[in-house]
Structures are given as C-alpha cells and as structure tokens.
Picture 1 (cartoon, rainbow, N blue to C red):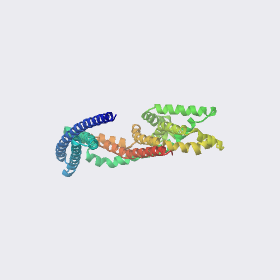
Picture 2: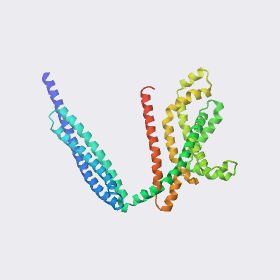
Picture 3: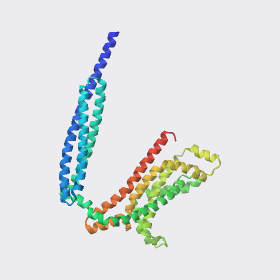
Picture 4: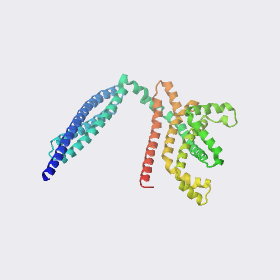
Length: 371
C-alpha cells in the first residue's frame, strides 16, 4: 500500500515537473520572440525618427519641435525592449530553477512581460506606419489635412461658426427631452381609451426612425419655406434645423424613455395606484423618476449623436462650422479647415463619451450593491 502511494506520488510529481518544463520552454520561446520584435521595432523607430525629423526640419519645422516626437517614440521603444529583455531573463531563470514553484512564478512573470512587450511593439509599429503615411509623397497627406498656417489663420472663423452648431445642439436637446417624453407616455397609455394616441406615437416613431436625418433636414429646410404659411415659412435655417433634428431624435429618444418606463417593476405602479394616485400622478411621481435612473447613459449617447449630426444642417445652407470650413477649403484648395471642425467635434464629444462610461460604471456598481 505504501509503495503504491509512493509510486503514485512520484508519478504525479514527474508529470508536474514535465508540465513545468514544457511551460518554461513556451515562456522562453515567447520571450525570445518578444525581445527580437522589440529590438527590431527600436531600430525601425530610431531610423524613422531620424528621417522624419530631418524631413520636418526641411519643411520649416523647428529643430526642437521636429525632434521631440521622435525622441519620445525612441524612448518608448527602448522601454519596450527593456521590458522584453527582463521577460527573457525571467524565462531563462525559470527554465533553470530547481524549485517547481519558483519556476512557475518566474514563468508567469515572463509571460506577462512578453505579452506586454508584444502589445506595445504593435502599438509603436502602427504609430510609425501612420507617421510615414503622413510624410510620404512629399508630405502630401500632411499638407492636405494639417496645414498649420491655414489652420491658424482660419481657426477663429471656424470657431465662431461652430457656435451655430452649439446653439442648434443646446436648443434641440432640450426640446427633444421634452417632446420624446410626451411621445413615450402616449405610447404607454393603457386601455382602449389610449389606443388612438398609442397608434399615432407608434406611427411617428416608425416614420422618423425610418427616415435618414439628412432627408428630414432637407425636406423641412427647403419644404416649409415653399408653403408660404404664416410664421412657418419665415423661420431661419437654424430654426428649420432645430425642428428637423427634434423630430428625428425625438423618435429615437422616445424609445429610450419607453424602455425605461416599461422597465419599472409593475409592483411599483400597483403600490402607487393602491395609494389612490391616478395614472397621471403615478407616471409623474413614481414611474418617470424611476425610469430616468436607468436611461441616463443611453440618453447621453443620443446627445453625443445629436452633437455630431448638427453638421448635417450644412445641406440647407446654415453657416455652421462645416459650411464655413467648406468655404475656406474651396478658397484655398486645402482641407485643413475641415480638420479644424473635426478637432472641435472630437474635443466636445470625448468628454461626453467618458461621462457616459462613468455613468454606466456607476449604475453597474449600484446594481451589484443591490441599489
């Protein structure tokens, strides 16, 4: 019996040892590949930094400004090579370690370092490729989209026109939140008495979710002035843009509201009605407040989309940032002013996107905590 147990223990120890040695060889191979890739990347980045820096200086960029990006990239590549070298060293120590547990720990550290080095190597190669793309053909891409002199001279005009986009967004966002809530409430009206309004709400949502926003803007922006109706036909193009975006995004946002309203547990509604609250008061004091807690992130996503789609108003002649940049681009045969518009939208959109991420994380933590 004792001999059998000893035999089984020895067999298991032998299997564990062989698995550890096999894993050590895998770690060593991966670390070697990571070190070779990191060394090749360092050479490529250093050579690219030298050539691209020299080219930038020949194009009038100051020596310091041309040297800084290449120096940072080379330093990053050197750090990646150091990480890969440490991973290779740990993998070699793991293969020579007599203690099985020490070998496993060193192998895990080597594997993590190797994957980190390979990840950063890929990122540096992508950045280097983009840098060469900007510089090839006598920097045709850079001169077409990133003419710093034109960006500097036209930036104020574009920023002033961007105020129109901000105005359209701010007014439309308020109107959309109110209008879409009314549509969502109409969509959820109970009983036969609410059937006509439910039908109209469904028809409205299907219609404007099916129409592309640019078509809605075009029809309203050019169609309403042709009607010769009092007041309606005399509005500004900005007003028509606000109406069109409100109708379009009202349809999408009403579905977000409806999902939140229908997500409220029926026991909450039953409790409110049992206390004598009418349907309207139940919606006002119970259902809508509870629904809003769950739909803030998707509402913010709709706001981000609305902010970007304000550029579509250029089709009806509104002098927004995009239209202003098109005028500048046509006069200079260069698209750098349009790049300025892109940067402005990105600067506004990214903080909103990060806010949405934080709200989603907060809701997730609240749900895990049972709140």
